[in-house]
Length: 260
Image (tube, helix red, strand yellow):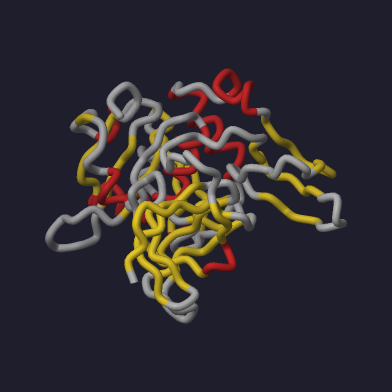
């Protein structure tokens, strides 16, 4: 059954998005609390949804609640945003909230950190230095998780999307989609500027399969399956076999800020 012009909001700290309307299917992404979605189709207790990144997948109804009238999926959440915190609610409920999740109005912060909506733009500007600093601060130690978008577990495009989103820049979900955004960066990966996205492929046809965030000065940060998760690489480290493979698989760089 197709649902016309219906919208909902993610109500749980993290909502897994599945490839098919069944819990045993692959997780293809995640949405965090407060994220608005458009309901495209319903099958029993499952909804095919589209979020602000225009990525489609299936959410179970248990993860969502009806959205307020006039909700636009492209609007930034207006409430307090978690930077990694634990909250309690008047009914005694307790929730661990990941980076980027929006707190409910009646939630009280017990530990961790948040940013008020009015302070978010000033604290997290769309600036290359600030964006890379957030990647290093909030995702250090994160394990690799296919489809993940939080410091509790993320994939390569998940960290890139989450960090840019924190700074008010909406990117697409998958690495190959992100590779179509912005404008061309430097041809030589060694000349990549801070904040550029660096794309790689391990396929014969060259289709992008991996993305990293340039730190400038011949360094990058990424979440890589081959590293088990978070890693900072020095691209001029000739003795590192993993880095050598990265250089062989480099496709191109894209400059995002000012062009998305």
